[in-house]
Length: 551
Image 1: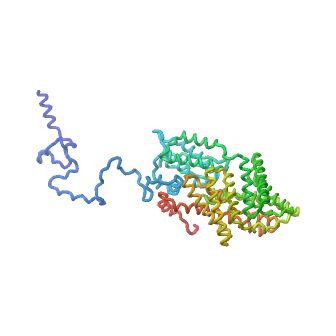
Image 2: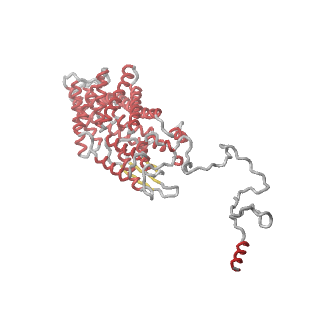
Image 3: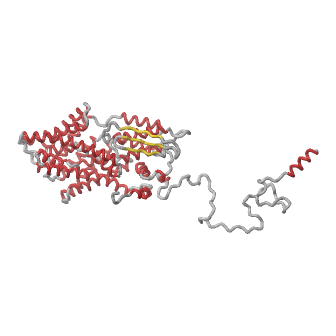
């Protein structure tokens, strides 16, 4: 009992803890003891005798204390500036969302919400980068613009949780760098595009894969993405070889009718183009570069045109050669080159333009060799025929639509898009004819306006179907290609009129550039009709990069 009482007295003599008394509590013996020691007061309790604090300011004031909130109502950890709320970035197609963010500096991009799930250890960085490069390779090999390829790579990487990624695209090289944090070691990977081909069906399949990966409603794991990518690579072309050869002949025949040819000219141009296509396939099977393939492919149509000029057949020999040129002019590569240049990818644009120049020189060499031999044999071609095109509106509209239809088949487009691009090409030719033939406007501005409509409608069609714009644009510019001006310049050069020939080729180059710039301008104008979240903010962020005086 004594020990118990002693222990009790000792406990009573223990000093009170800081948890029981505040810093403002008077020490024992200097004042009245507070009531209720078992209910400690706060350290910020105002002591007695001091004035009360002023009333709280009204809600919304800068001096108002923060209100409490639940976990569901908590603000995000990263709040971006005005104009780009993160929750609204899923309201537009992934192409526009990723392009908007790519045009922003890295430090102001919104933090992503990973669409696809990954394990607790985080995303498999190596596999995600490899998948991203493989998808970018297919897009670049299919002729997609460098900015769209970077947007697709950025969308795939962000969807799998790699937000701090920087993709880089050049003509034949793809690379991507991921930095996990500001102090973490970056991880880089690259891939080289060895082979390039035209297959817009495969291109559309890759776009659908990227759309599924970047869509929250469709969960696509890495294994599923690899499986679908392997199927896309293994799929055969939608059209057999004989269909492509027949389409080449129909394209050349329709182009010859477009520039004033008749029935004989139609069949001569078709046969010459099919022979040239078969010879090009033979050269490709032997491993010859594309330059020599174009040289060989340009010879048969030119030979048939010279043969008609040597005979007494009343036919336009120039229309035969012009029709063959329409089937060879690299309009797709030219549009892609100018698009890359206008969007700031100057290295890729320069490489594409150099490729176009080499292919064009190959066509010139093939035609010039045949024309020179024809002149030595006594052929008397009339250069003025190439520019005197008979106006036959209904026949020319039908021929232009046949040309676009066959061009779409040569590009391996999906059957569901062939009719849309055919209609788009018909509208382009009607616009050009109304401006040039009826209105008397020069061919360069007329071509630019018609190509602008092609780009506008093509971009709107692509956004409606959430697909690439190339299948809706490339074939539609076929009737606008400068086949007549090219042949006229080559014929003058063969007749030793170098100055006039170079002037005509310069005019053809101006028309080609008008096509490319018009298509790009129409595509950019189409974004005026579409709501792209954050576009205004991105434009403000890029204001520092604006140059107005060339330095």
